[in-house]
Amino acid sequence: MNYDLLRLTAGAVVTIGLYTVLFRENKFYRFCEHMFLGLASGWTMVALWTETLQTNWWEKMIGTDRAPGAWAYALLLPIGLMAYLVFSKKHNWISRIPIGIILGLWSGQQIQVWFNTYGPQISASMKPILPTTWESFIVPSATGLSPEATAAIRQNVYPSQAITNFLFVLTLLCVLSYFLFSFDVKNRVLKNATTLGRYLLMIGFGAIFGSTVMMRFTLLIDRMYFLWWEWLREAVFNIR
Amino acid sequence: MSIGERLQSIPRWGVYLMLILVTSVPLFLPIRVPNKPVESTIDLYAALMELPTDKPVLIASDWTKSTRGESQGQFNSIMRILMRRGINVVFYSTGDPQAPRVYQDSMRVLNEERAVAGEPPYERWNNWVSVGFFAGSEAATNGIANDLRGAFRGRKDFAPGRGLIDVFESPVMRGITKVQDFPVLLVITGSKTSNITVERVSGKTPLAFAVTGVMTPETQVFYQSKQIVGFAGGLKGLYDLETLMEVGINTDNPNTVKSEKYGSIPGFPGQKNDGQGTRYYPTLHFAMALMILMVVLGNVGLLLTKSKGRR
Image (cartoon, rainbow over all chains, first blue to last red; front, side, top):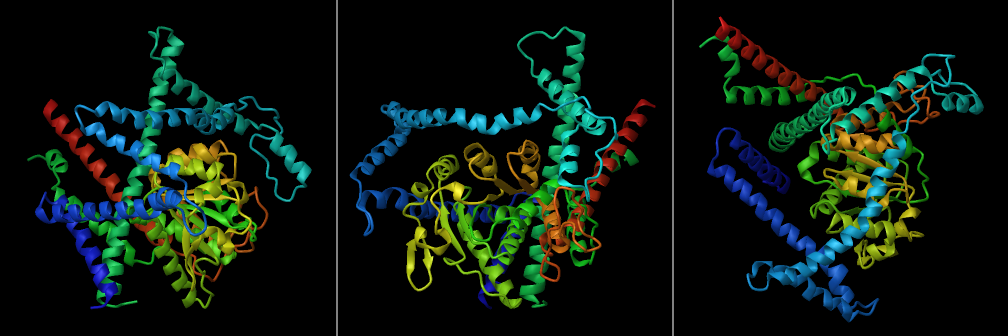
């Protein structure tokens, strides 16, 4: 048995083992699950040392043949170890020190994070809802036109674009109005807007769920391809 | 038991059996689904094809075998484009400790494919370099965005015949001092590291993503607000990418993809462009059809039972 066949067979056995839970909870499934967890944990521990702690802390502290070490990095160790005092009833207050440092760093960055994430989205939401031209209902084709003519077309807002933008802005406002929880909504227009916002959210969630389901199906298809094609056909029966 | 009750109590093993059948049998059939690539993938393809060839691309490869069905195909397609254009690549990962091993394995497989096609190998160290895994995606991405040299300091990769050497000595990293030196930061991810990249790197260098179906709706928001130049979302995005690689944009090919945003951008006809997207996309339709059928049957069963109860 060659190495590739052995590797693929192990993969196939574990794949089938994990799918046996669909029939019922069983020991073979538990074995595969625990084996995966063990392997992943072991790999992660080694990777954390070799790829992070060694290069980002240890070598910077003790130095290498290319750069001298900096003893100040040693101070990070007790700060990190303080976090483990969370398990001590008497000294668990000490664990709040590293947590506080992390929270402080995190909070300081959130202003930039928030603006980077939502700033451009807020700006992009300001869409014109009135057409600037009635020459054509839809956006004319720019194929074969000069750059100036193309730029002129792109500057205009055509009725079809205005309708799309209106739907976007309507959706945005209705969904935002749904989250007005601070006061009792009695105004009829606002009440209808919040109801519409709720329905629009449901449509959005439906679309997101559909996309998620498609992804899960794709992962299943990939496993089936692995089992039937890569393992059984190519590795076991050697059909290429 | 009435028909309505029967429709609502199809045995679970029967449903699973049908699911296994519909996700297996079509894989063996030569079916091809017609395709009209979406704008976000057209933009991603155009961005990849318009990259300068004298600068390396930074890729955050944050996927593992858990999302192989989508991410592996996306990785392979993007790398085929970059390899054919002769663009060097710097890989890193913040998503999962297993990710560096996975992209290194994928590069080995792609090189085997190149050898079969009679193309020169894409050499580690000379054409691509692995910076490795960084724990803590937020902090690591922040470091890469603000102090690339500091973030990558001390990282080593295998140089042929020399062993582990500082990545900054690699010819790939020549002239690179900050994230802005990369013409694009590509994130191929099976998790939310794409969001973190927008949070931390946005505005410093153009961003482009390849994400799973779960992340597609969220990523669409970034695309609409022009925070990213383009993205391939899920299996559809992958199939789009493979289609574009075959027919190009506005080319002489009768099946070419038309786009008014771009001039003529060639594909790679005659080369290996088909991959997981072309292979899995028809099968996905069968699986979706089964799911719709089951939902309809369940609801019909419910209605029949209710109407019987009323009578």
